Image (cartoon, rainbow over the protein chains, first blue to last red):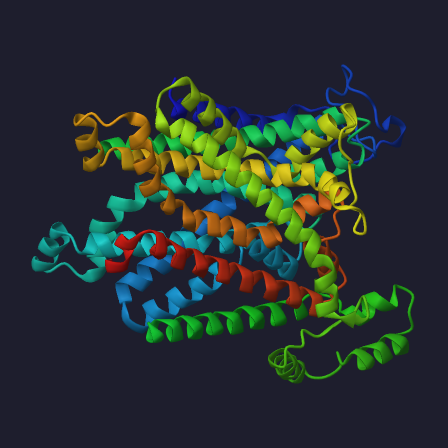
Length: 264
Length: 312
């Protein structure tokens, strides 16, 4: 089976469980149940309960919704930011290009994780804030990719032919050049989504991303850290799903990249 | 050359000014200030005001900003509000832990990453390549702190071979290294996966070059050839290595938190929580300067070891 298929199947499974799972779960992921604190796995609580008596599986499934949504939203945001800014820079050239390039370069001066951390600290924790911080932090890569691809495509003969026929620069960029590299961006985006999943988990683990009691894979694991030695399963389960989700996206990205390479 | 050095320096200076201004303004846009947090929840309003005046936080933002730059240009990183001592002192105290951890992690990731990458890239499609692919795939998907949990459960709890948390700042070298083993391993594996992946790709790319085919057709032994291929392929790893080494100074935050290591990362986290502006700015300056410097060094090194780039 190809990596693309494995990745797609695994990703579909995880997304489906996050979408449907919380709806099927009989337990509330947020309301504490002090009578059932630190319960071991049982028929009722498959992954046991945490320090507030909440079902770990229920929190993991709901947390998956939040984590996957943040990763997906941030990926779209980063793609849109990079794409729009990159196309504007190449399209308008001159001062606009210089200013945009400088601005994105300033973001690249930060080591990756520090940038996200500072952005989240400044924006304050929360689902939307985390999404925004990740989206902004990821955008310089896409700006650079779009700018490089667009400029190289604009130098090709087919674009020259289009220009000779009187097509405007905007048309050349959007109708002729863009379709030739949008696929590469999509492949890269799958890999970025995997990274965002891991970074969001780290942020929420540090208590800076998604604030409690809203569950996300990161803060579910943060809870699990405090009773790691007593109840390792509470950390193993959600972590395994998180790692699988990142793995699935990475497989998808790598597999699709190989296919694109073979075609060109 | 002089012209190049000047434009580079200017470019770095501009970047630093922008970066520091962003952090300065950003930090002060946070809700709640250091005076309120230091005074505690049940402090009188007058008390908070007095503290605010004492710390100079009542001055207009633009004045604080100006004073900050005047101090900075004199080499003064400012004062830690929370710890009530110079920021430089705080940094000097916490830096060694992070440097040791980052150094150990980087060294380990280099050895493992290059080893796995070379093993995989020498014979694509072999069993060794398959195992290496598994390693890189899993390594890249591992959530750092969760991997730390696994190591803690296995080595510290089950086997009792390593300490779970803490760091003996005053302890003997061996003791300190012992405490750094699991944290360094946590940081090294995902980075080794990245290095191995790129090393393999670079080797395969280089092995497809014309000179390799010619040498092979003339009967050069594969072992002798590998050395030439590697020598040409591996300098291409320098940019990635620079990103990783430069990023480690603040890339250790999560691991420091999991293992309770009193380094720069924990200091930064605490400072953000306490709105200790000086320390956040101090850590950021150090991290950004090191990051830029390491990357520039790698660029220079690459040109040095690969003379072809000099004419590009």
